[in-house]
Each structure stands twice: as structure tokens, then as C-alpha cells.
Length: 482
Image 1 (cartoon, one colour):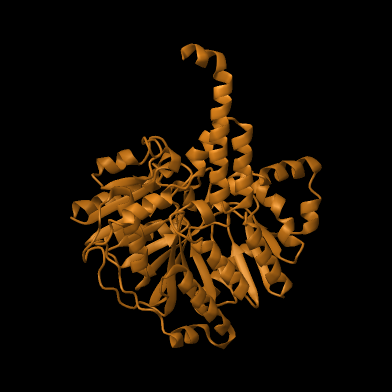
Image 2: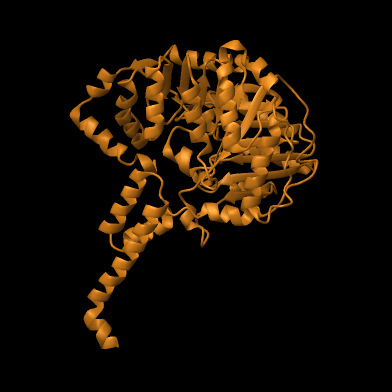
């Protein structure tokens, strides 16, 4: 037998490789929805014997959905708040006559997410860490019962340590504190913030730790949500991480401009439900009781809906919400995002909107913090510019803001970017708002960005040097994985 194996090992290896390649390729064809991603994986599998298949089964298979489904079978005791759906009359009053067509968008998102649109909310924008961090720490210092905090990046720097100190003070007062950090997000500074959290005796966990045996295949699936809830009554969400760069007054080497939001009213319950689900997913601890889920009362006039999305759900909820919003737009559609790598469906929807006469404005940073993403973005801009969309580039500091507005009546805020990672791979949380005053405030913020921005034209994109266009085009090929 040994002699047979020694003399025929090349044929055996080839046969095994063929079987593995066929199995992996069949799995790609049957499960991958994105044709470009499927084609890329098939190429890797066939042109890198054995290694390509191992890479696919390690990084390309979405096991997170099955894990979430298994966990949810044990979640029957989780609190599910009975949120009050906004009445049709309330939505009509909020939209007024000029935006009544957006009622169809509300119905669409309700069916997509199975989440009600909730009345009675108030949202306050907090510009950069200069406004957001002091307000968040003030809320932590006033906490009486609980603090739940979920973030992607939690740096071990002066701002991060300031949060740890506030959380420690809360714990010492007897407040229940839970902190969830994405595992990759803990490694942006060394040593990580985990050491400071342990010193403060703060209960924390990391989301899908990648160095744990059996978890390595989840490396590509990250929790990008930013949620903080105090006493179950005051919520904070948006796109801002916890790191020094977000506080512009700190004059760091890499300043980042962003907007976070303070929320009050029944919508905070949806933030808390999302955090509790993520916490149980990571720790199997179920958070219940009045300290986490108090009765929530109206705090303002806004109609809001929280949308939690991720690779564990059946639909791309945020992506479909964006498609629905673009399709409903009649007058204006404004987008500000740090990363702009929309797929073919989103590009087509934006172009159709512009050709229908909608004023489509896209605001991007002139210089991003990720060179490969910046190159790929520039290589795609011609696809929207040639059909009438307007694109503006903002000057430094790097703008990490994420806002979408439609017809001066609908706003979309949260953690999701316009790229495949946010819309397909990451766990994200956004809030849609039906409110004229708040949308006017968001548009005012965007206009302030536009006042110093530079409009880029199709001619600008086409006149780049040949070497730059080739470089950007090569980067664009990696778009499904960026």
C-alpha cells in the first residue's frame, strides 16, 4: 500500500484536488448572490490548487447566519418591546403635502424589516468628538441603572481612557455596565483598551474574536455598529468610533470629521434591542429587566425606525432601504459618505433618478484614509457622472459623515457606508427619520460641507494620467471585497 501511494501520489493528489475544487466551486455557484464575487472565488479556487479552496472555505463561506439562527433558538426569553406603529395620519402630518409620496417608502421598509415606524422621538446631532464625547460621558456620569456600549473601534488613547474612567465611575456607583467591542477594532492601538477595561472591572466582550480556535473564518464579518444606551432611555448612534482623531481640538495627525446623534423617545428601545441581541450573541448573557428596558415616553415629534442589518439576516435591509429611497425621490437626493463603492443596482438607481430630473448630489472626501478604496471610488465615478449625478469632494479633515436625505423630508443616519463591506458583510445599524425640520438640519450640514467643496466632472475623471487610471481601474476590480 505504501509503495502504491509513493508511486502514484501525484495522481492521488490531482484527484483529491479536483474533488475539492469541484465541491468548492459548486458551493460558490449555489450560494453566492454577487456574480463578481462568485467569479472571483471560482478563479481563486481553480488557479490556486488546494490553497484557493482553503481560502474560500475559510473566508468565503457565511457561517454567521447559521450560528445566529442556532443562537436565536435559545433566545425565547429575550424581551421584545411592543413598539407603537405610527398611524397613517401621523406620517401624513409629518410629511405634509409636498412629501406624501414617501408614505410608500415607509410601507416598503416596514415590510422589508418587520420593524415599526415609531412616533414621539427627538434626535440631536453632535458634531465631531468635540461635542459628542463630552455629552456621552455626561450621560454615563448621570446613569442610575445601566450603560450599554457597542463600538467598532475603541482606542487606548486619551479619549478612550476618558470613556473607561466614566464607565468605571458608573460601575462603582452600582450601575450595570456592558461594553461590546469588535475584536478587530480593539487592535488599532497597542496595548489594546481591553487592559484598561479589566483594570476598571468593567464587564466587556469582543465580537467574534478572530484568534480563538474555530472563529478564524469569521475574520471578514465585523460589527461596525456604534450604539450607546444609558438607563434604557438615552441613546447615541451614528458613525463615530471612540478615538482621539474624532476630537478635532486634539490636533492629532489624522483628524476625522463626523457626526454622532443623541436620541430620546421610544426609538431608544430599538437601539437597546439591537445591543442586547449582539451581547447575547457574543456572551450568551440575556439582559432583561427594567434597568435595561424601562417604559419609554414621547420626547419629540419625529417618526423614526431603527434598522439593524448584517450577514445574519435574510435581506440586505440597508441596501434595499437605499434602493427604495432612491426610487421614491422626486426632487432631491443628497448623499454624504466616506466610502462610495455602490454596486450595479445602486448605480443604476442613482442614474435613473438623475435622468428623471431628481437633483442627485454625492459628497465624498477629496482624500480618504484608505488609498485602495479611494482609487476604486475614483475609477467608478464616471458611471454616475455621465448620467447627471453631481459629485463634490470635501477638503481635509477626512470626512467620515454618513447621511442620506430625500426630498427635504426623509433622512437616513447611522454606521453604514456605501460599500460592499457595509452593505453585505458588516453588522450595521441605521435610523430612518421622517421629519421636515430634522432633514432641513441635515441638509444645512451638507450645504456647509459643499460651501468649501470642489465639484468634480466627468472631464476631470477622464483627464487623469494613464498610469493613474490603470492603477484605479485595478483597484476597482477588488470592489466586492473592499
